[in-house]
Image (cartoon, rainbow, N blue to C red):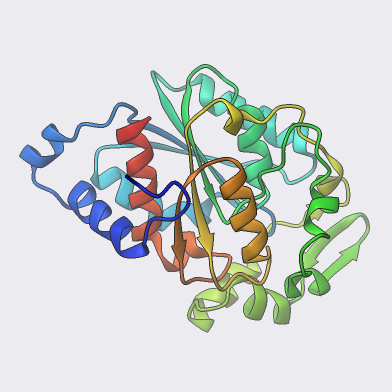
Length: 257
């Protein structure tokens, strides 16, 4: 019987290989129930962070849509995501990284959404204070590097390179730092009023080297939602450093949703 908490990273890679690099015959035999994928970025980033994952999904004939949301409020992010979902032509896999886990939990109640994928993401219950929940675990180092100015915050270069984008080549990480999206001081104050993971199949990718969200908090949330889970030896940006594994997990959600 499949362990509901943790698949090995090797298994995820194997599934990804068979789905993402298979022949046309293989693809026909494993045609996913959901071909639409909507991907939502987290804080300190923009939609371009999904580029490596999107390329792999497109190779597997998924239709990928990346949401660009303003990082101002939870409600604005949810609204932008709902607009993207409305444009899909059938069952849709909704994917969120980091803060976008909250957006996914709320917008995922849309009837078009067949499954949810969380990538090192927040996953509060309906009405739950995520900040209070996070404080029950050891604080991640990245939070100390947040610098505020005129109502907006960004990670310092040191915190971004070391704690947010660890494991990514420095030249690439510095580019990501330059294009990071500033967050409003209202972004983290919102609370979800619904938790789609309570009623829809969910998958979760834990980043074991995460210094932005405590990995044990990620494991707690994944276990609580009874998500099919993989652990990736990566920093918070596993979607950039390990796109093959993340795309493979999304592909699983398409097959089994």
